[in-house]
Image 1 (cartoon, rainbow, N blue to C red):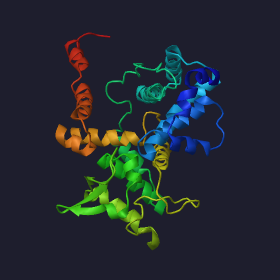
Image 2 (image 1 turned 120 degrees about the vertical axis):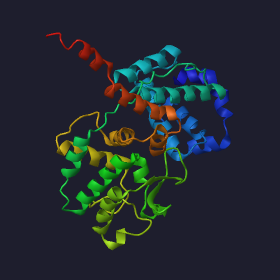
Image 3 (image 1 turned 135 degrees about the vertical axis):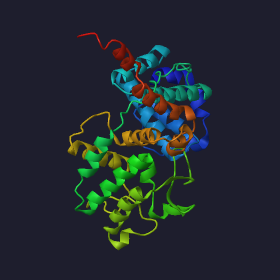
Image 4 (image 1 turned 180 degrees about the vertical axis):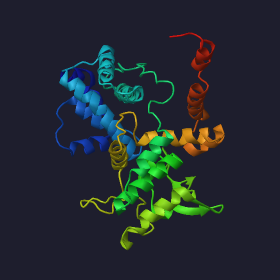
Length: 333
């Protein structure tokens, strides 16, 4: 790619913003123009660091793939081949689409910077499946996992309180990872947990902590040393010797949930920490919550997202297949 890009864009590179060029010149030498251009592109993005990190991780996939395949003059067909490569990795439609979006932005930036033509224009991601892919837990499975935790140590009390909170509130792992003790407050006579939701910059949403949700949290907190009970301390902390007292990461939370599921014989790749969020919203609807109430619980920006849950419940509980069976009940098989 270096030879062809040089023919196309030498003058454009020299006219790039001075501060961007200075920033790149201070880094270690890049292996080739793909990596060089990727860094320039990332420096041009006006987003939060966490978002830029996601872009970098996703774009690096394309950059590595193109470099490995020695594609020196990328074309539209090459981007389509990369899309096929992602599909062959058995990634979800949502994941593939997010990777393609970043590639499109990368080539759009190169064209606007007069570096290289936008060969990824109008290339679409994968169609998202209707509904959600993760399964939900049954009430029996919830009982199995919670009653399967022996509440003998502080770590066990933490895991019980954590999973119980996920099942009863539908919180995302990132929302739990960001939660401190000071976020537990009173509102309208009820205990609530203020959270920093998905895509938010502040803690401006909350979930209600019912007695059955809050009591296990209090038991866990009472088992911790006094110096870990300060207002700015995390609600759920690490108990490992390496980083004792620090906040749990989203990966750690997912690992805890998966470990507890497997420990009681629920070893299913479609059941994860995020499945507990689906479970909470599904249980709310089954328990009589309105669509609007379930939307508030899940904090869905679009009510159509909540409607998917209602549709899935209705599809099972009012399955027309059962009505066919009733008409054919005299048919001997």
